[in-house]
Image (cartoon, rainbow, N blue to C red):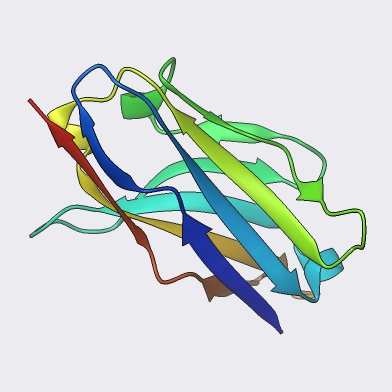
Length: 125
């Protein structure tokens, strides 16, 4: 089992920056990939950024050049794996609840997901 907790959301003016944190605990060495998603009111949840256990990253076009996802960061006591999302040049359209997802790739190539509760990001114009 993996538990996922996001933090770092808040209110920021357009053009500002925020850094979100996603801390996974439990069976952290079973995690193969971690993603950030977001969901704005009335819209579907969308993928923002992905990082794999070997450090490969991928970004949605609408955040390329503005957001950076970190590599896996394992705590010194091996109890937590933390991934950060640095968000710069924020726009009002970035306003959403941001969710972290930790994924395990199973032997049949399917993926088992662990979701956090989300953190609100509000960008004022």
